Structures are given as C-alpha cells and as structure tokens.
Image (cartoon, rainbow, N blue to C red; front, top):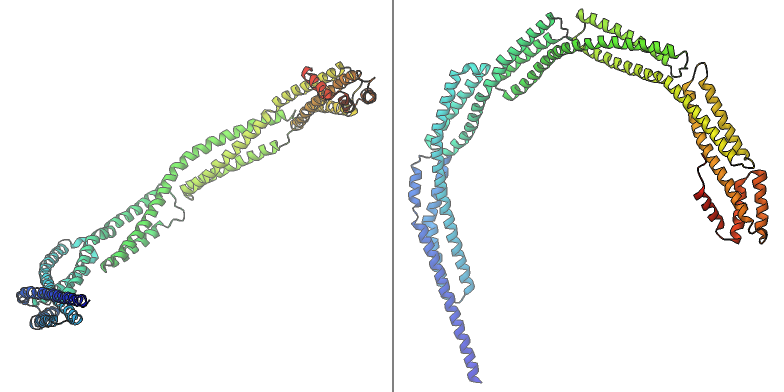
Length: 570
C-alpha cells in the first residue's frame, strides 16, 4: 500500500517536471522568434531612405512631416529596439521559475512591443514613399501645367475673334492661373509639397474650368453674334416681303418682338463677357424659342394662304350645290304638299336652310373684301372658312334628310294601300273560316273585337283617301291593324279549337250518360254553355273533369288527339 502511494506521488512529480520543462522550452522558442523579428526590422535600410528623403529639399509642412517620420524612426532605433532586448531577457529570466502567469504576461508585452515597432517602421517607410511620390507628381504637374498655359495663351491670342466679349475676362482668368502656377512652382522647388498640394488642387480645378470655358464659348458667341443676327434679319426681311404681298398678321407685333429679342441678345453678350456661361446657355434657349415663335407665325400665314385658296373653291362649289338642292327640294315639297300633310316642319326647315345659305354667302363675300383690303389675315379667314364649310356640311345633311323623308311618301302610300287591302282580305278569310265551322253562335267579346278590327280597317281606308294624306297617322293605323289582325287570328283559332273539342267531348260523354249521373249532369250543363251562351271554354271546363272521373286521363287524350289531327284554319 505504501509503495502504491509512493509510486503515485513519484508519477505526479515527473508529470509536473515535464510540464515545466515543456513550458520553458516553448517560452524560449517564442522569445527567440521575437528577437529574430527585431533583428530583421533593425536590418531594414530605413536610415538610407531617410537620407534620400532629405535630398528632396523639403520645407514648410512637408519638412514637418519628414521630421516627424525621422523622429519616429530615431525613437525606434535608440529606444524601442533596446527595450525589446530588455523585455526579452526579462521573459527568459521569468521562464526559469514556475510563475507561469507572470511569464505569459511579460511574453504578451514583448509581442506587443515588437508589433508596435514594426507598425512604426512601416509607417515611416510609407510616409517617405508618399513624400517622394508627391514630389515627383508636383514636378511633373509643373511641366504639364506650363504646357497647358502656353497652349491656352496661344489659342487665346490666335482665336480671340471666337470669344468675343469674353476675351478680357478669359485673359484675366488665365493671368490669375499663371500667378497661382508660379506660387505652386516655387513651393514645389522649395520642397513644401504639403502647401503646394493645396494650391495644386485648386489650380487643377480652375485649369479644367478654363479649358471648358474656352471649349464652350465659341459656339455660344457664334449664336449670339452671327446665327441670331442672321435669323432676326431674315425674319425682318420676310415680314416686309409678306406685307408687300398682302399678308396680314393678327395683332402684328413682330417688329417690336424683333427689337426686344435683339436687346435680349445684347444683354446676353454682356453675360458672356462676365463668363456667366450657365446663364448664357439658358438665355440662348429663350432667344431661340422666341425666334422659332416668329418663324411659326409667318409659316402659319403662308400655309393658311394655300388652304384659303382651296377653301374658296370648295365654298363656291358648295354654295351652288346647296342652292340647287334647296331649289329642287322646294319644287318637290310644293308638288307633294298638294297630296300629303307635312308634320315635321319640312317647309319651315327648308326656308330656314335657304336663309342660312344666303347669310353665309354674304359672310363669304364680306370676308373676301376684308382680305383684299388687308384687314384680315389668312389664318383668321381660314378659321372662318372652316366654320362655314362645317355649316354647309350640316345644311346639306339636313336637306338630304328632308329629301329622303318626302321622297318616300308616295311609295309609303302605295305600300299602305296594298297592306290595307291585304288586311281586308284576311278579315274576309277569318269570317269565311268561322262560317264554315257552323258554330251555334259566337261569343259577344269575340264579335266586339272582330268589329273593332273591321272599324280600324275602315279608318285606315278613310285616311288613305283623304285630301291631304297624313302618312304618320296612316303608319300608326297600319301598326294597330297589323297587331289587331294577329290577335284576331289567335282568338279565332282558339275559339274554333274550343268549340270543336267541346263537340267531341259531348259525343264521347254519350257513352257514360246512362251509367254516370255526374257525366249526364255535366253533359246537360256543357250543352247549355255550348248552344245558348257560346261559352265553349266553360263547356270544356265542366265536361272534362266529369269524364276524367269515370275514365281517368281521357280528357287530355281527346284534346291531344284533336290537336294532332286538326288542319290549319287560315
């Protein structure tokens, strides 16, 4: 038992020793790595790079930047490298003991110091590289700007006619650029690249602005100095020529507008001299729209003249046609008015249309006089002509409508007489068909309807024989008679069917008179309805149920049999 405990204790001691040994070896290995990293950083030729940077002859803000970089590196060289060595030795010393927490803390501090030192060296090297790039860029910019300004100066001198009133302002702008350029060059040569950078950004922006202005101004100036002037002169001459040719412009303010546009053009030239190019472009747009409006005004009158000449021919031919139509209409109305009654103010409408034709002809002649006296423009006359042509179209439509109505009166009269005769024949046929059936008599309501239809036919015949035939009334009566004839046919057909079926029911009932008191009584009552009252439908209603009581379904069979065998009455 004692040996087991001793073995366990011995095992624990061995494991602890091995753990301490491994931790110490690991710490030593990591410290060696940090020391190697420090030696690598120390071997970089940062000092040589600083010496090269000093050759840039830096001053001002750039010199301050350089000095800051140099100071940072000196701190690394003289202090931080030494502190890294000291910290490394401290970690190795602590690693010999068993205070692992403190050892790890000091090891982490060593790692942080190495990383911080590496970041400082990288920052110094990056800063030196940036200073060199700025130096190279500024020196290159000096040459580029010098060439640009020489080119701009040459162009400004050689093409000054293209810039018009903008020349003095452009020259002043370029001189200011050259002054700023001289300052930029001086700062660059002195090595004050930080201050030079601020000037260069402004200089580059203004140089681009100068180039854009010199690119845009010629086109703007050409419009103001040449294009618009030529257009204004063209409009002025065109207006004068059209006036001489007899053209009239409504509320003619073209000359005043030309003067106002030219004044605006002069004002925009002043804006151009102040290099307010955005305002110049906007004002040029206004000027162009005003000029286009004047062109449109003249174009409107020129186009209107062509249309006026075409419309004049149309108006003349339309007047002749409408007068002829109206005259023929008057003759036809006079002839038909001796036989027919007019109910739709055809005579009054024809006279009103003639008055409109006469009044419009006077307007046409008056407008022509105004045009000849140069008191009306072609566009105004065209508008009036369009209204007159529209009126003529409406007059013609009304005259044609009247003509179509009255020209069909005789045909309608003939057709009505034929229909009246046809309806009379149908009445006779109905009468004859009923007489052939040899009925005991006819119901009062049927006879009243028959005679009412006959009277309608008489009224129709009377209307067709009147001194002045009212075809509207004739047509109304025709519609009534047509509907009544159809109804009379239906009533007659139904009446004959009821009477015939009643006769068959009475005959069939004889089979059961002796054996059925109900059938016998119903037969007597049905015969009374049939022979005395001529109420054939009542006779069917009485006898049918009685027969069904002795022979179920016989009533329906007899009716169906009759309907299948019956022949058309008319």
